[in-house]
Image 1 (cartoon, helix red, strand yellow):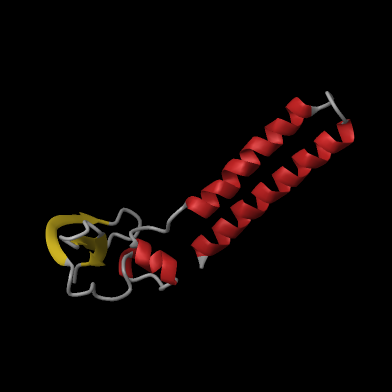
Image 2 (cartoon, rainbow, N blue to C red):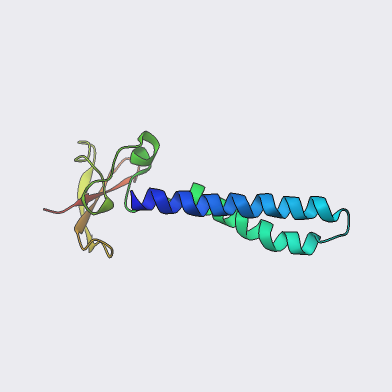
Length: 117
């Protein structure tokens, strides 16, 4: 919920900056305040791009594409498919403190992040 709200807020501010920059450039006319408009346009584009490109925590591309919810620690919501094998790679999620283990598909190298426990 909080991540979705933050992403929406950042994206909304980015859109406002882009629209404001276009408005300033249109009102000023050719050779007018183009430089000032760029100071709004560039950060706005970066904010919108960040929201679009940002992936949420330790989720596989599959989970992002299907829209599955988050599991414990921000990882996968379901146990990995049988093609995945556990690795020795473990870490503690810095935000939630949940221990996570990395699972990989030996054929493709795809990774999944699964809470330990």
